[in-house]
Image (tube, rainbow over all chains, first blue to last red; front, side, top):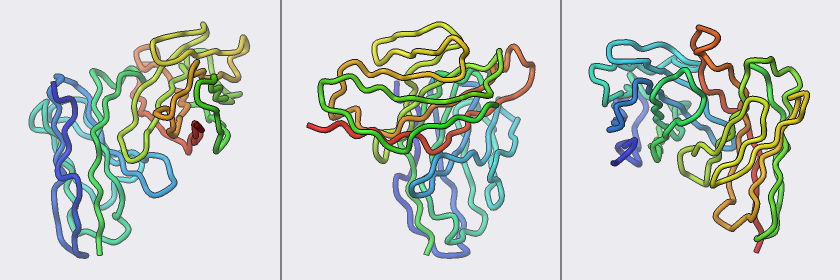
Length: 114
Length: 115
């Protein structure tokens, strides 16, 4: 049981490049979400999904796109990377968003935009 | 969801109990208290949650005051591996509210366990 798997672990991008951060879970969780964490700060929600085919915006969605074609995968796309998107990105999943417990987080993707 | 207030940092001696406070004076009757922690560079990890009764699991105990305006997370015998940022989150149980709720993280408390 791998839990939540994020790839890559590290990435350096040039300004204007695009890329996709991958997130996969093998727990048949209905709910998945993406957070970003800037140095010394708490996590901020970017986008979330309550099931395949359903996504919605979180607190800081600008510059990011998501889709959920399967229950297992929830990729995060950076359309045109900017230095302000330098951050650590965490993917999380939960059996349901209805409960605040039992969220499982991935180990993070550390992204630097130069 | 109600706001929470936590001290920015605390120290604790290894082997002693770590008591992490959280104020949530505007908590409403259907809001739960959740605790997560984040060990350096890792994703957050769920610890415990409660509504109004005290709760205990293999990781920690949660003490909620009778008026529910504050709570304390207790790590009974802190180890060096408990050094982490601890987040107190107050949130409605969406099943009872009928609306979506997200997990919102504040700044948390940096707990440092000293040898």
